[in-house]
Length: 160
Image (cartoon, rainbow, N blue to C red; front, side, top):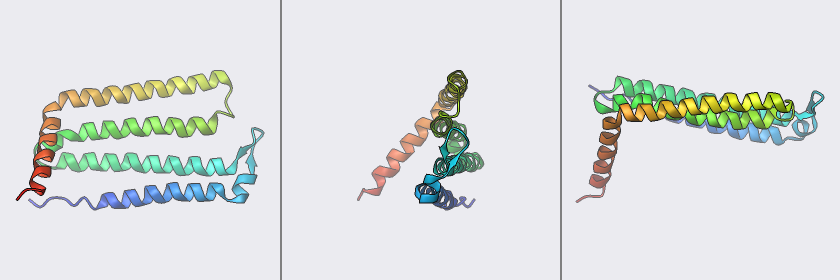
C-alpha cells in the first residue's frame, strides 16, 4: 500500500503565515490605524487583525482535523494518535482564540459580560485539556510506540 503524501501540510502552513502577515501589514496601514468603528472607537486595524488571526486559527484547526483523518486512514499504531492530535490542536486553537477575541472585545464589553466570556473559555479550555489527557491515557501505548519509533529512526539517521 502506498503511503499518502504529507505535502498538503505546506499549503496550510503557507496560507496561515500569509494570513497572519497580511493581517499585520494591513492593520498597520494608515487608513486602518486612523479609522475607528462604533462608539467604543475600536480601530479598523484591530478588526483586520482579529479577522486574520481568526482565519489562521480556523485553518490551523482544519490542518489538525485533516492530519487526524490521515492518521486514522493509516495502518498501525499511528491511527490511534489521531484523537490525541485533534485534541491537542483543539486546545491550542481554543486558548489562542480566547486571546484574540478578548483583546478585541474587551473595550466593548461591560465587566460582567466579560466575566461570562472568560468563564465560557475557561470551560472550553478545560474541556479540551481533559479530552487531550483522556485521549493520551486511552492511547498511551500508541504514544509510547510513536516516541520509540521516532527515537529509533533518529538514531538510524546518524548511524554507520
